Picture 1 (cartoon, rainbow, N blue to C red):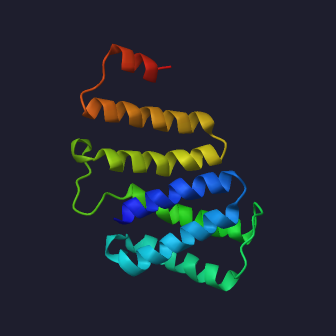
Picture 2: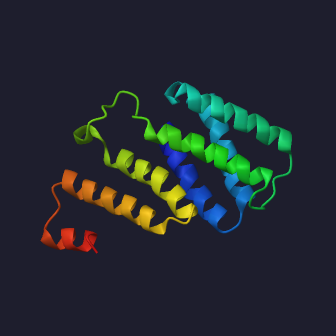
Length: 155
């Protein structure tokens, strides 16, 4: 459940951030961090829980959130996002690290966790490669790769 909440927060936060609504992104991430700490702490890596606690405390002390890049709000959003990414990169509790047992949602969440920061930092080609690789893995794992789909993914 923690992974789903994080993925949903990222789906809302990234477009807001990219549209210059950094305060909206930080607010969404902060609210999800509070929910995770309150209701899903047992699913979190201890380092992630600590980072989220620190960020939530900082958010409470900040009061008004701003939209400026490079602002305290921007730093807050990124500290929460890094913690979210760290959690998404961890294997889900009770799952194995081998590829055969990785679910489609885990593959997609991991791709978003790596691809969105690449895109946001200006590495469009890197983001594209992450998403293409994930698409290939999803198709391969479902046995859906044929010559035409492979050709599209190689474009």
